[in-house]
Image (cartoon, rainbow, N blue to C red):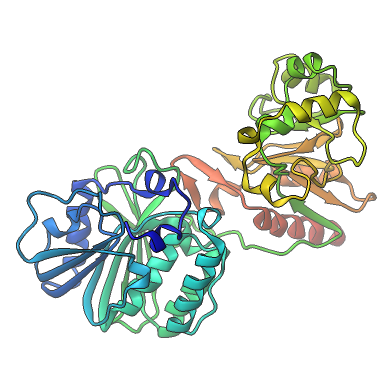
Length: 443
């Protein structure tokens, strides 16, 4: 592999992002494409892997580009298909009839920041739209596909469904809308990619059509297709993303570095002779251990469901300038490889984090049915990871706010994150909180 291209991702990215597209899905993708065009002169596949998209379809020339030279090609490739090795994002392509494929999904956290800014700048110059640096890699490939095809070309990519609503993809949606291209998005059924924890889609952008229409489809397990009115699959629009307002707002869970180091079990706390309040404070990394009908996280419940079950529920108070001898001994015992995370490496003192005040309410950002669990935080626990917190003015009726949140049918207002799992983004919760605040003021 080209060493300069390797810099684009972290050292382990290939194991995480190289997910082979099932052959039955490849064939189905071509069926959807041929409903729009019968024959293609030239086909481009960015990040082609073993070039399996070359096995189907009616075309005259197929060009695949793959960054990993160790990736074995299909043995039965047609003679009209060829594969080049290199970085698709650094190679210039023009005038293709169709761009097809399943581009790599790599989170922006896993990209080299200097390299990412360079790629984003290059893409921005091509499409004349600023690129959001929170964009995951597949969005760069989508943009590259759009500029590599003819003015009347077609782009058909298997990508995460989330791109139709996430703020980090707003720039590419704006680019498509500005050009008035037609978009068809097929939400694929659960289990198509068993290893992938995100809902997949076939997204087709038809540059020949200038009606600016966005059409959504649900694909059943038998691959029958049903048109739906909204990306949520319901009659409701996707819950908007709103910036926080100081009077009432949501905040994501703390990420101190690594929970294995910063969050201890009761057994570990006792072994290290760390004291509650002086050395550690209560924390929660999940609400799944609690009965779904709980509305309050009290001191007794915290001990019953977290402490006594030896969950990681004690956050070390290494945020303080001065720490006890016992806590110092624990910090000194942490081996370099145990704290070798991007968060810890960025700090002057690897363990010194900024501890938030305990939130008034806690909620699970992930849920399966209806909406997230919402709890009054009477134990004063710090929320971490997948637990969100709600803050605001002391005089607000938080018990009533929690009741309003439990009454919202979030399931019908958000896009499914992965299979049956729904994920409520922090700024979507901010929208719900602003709606509640408005109703409280009206009342």
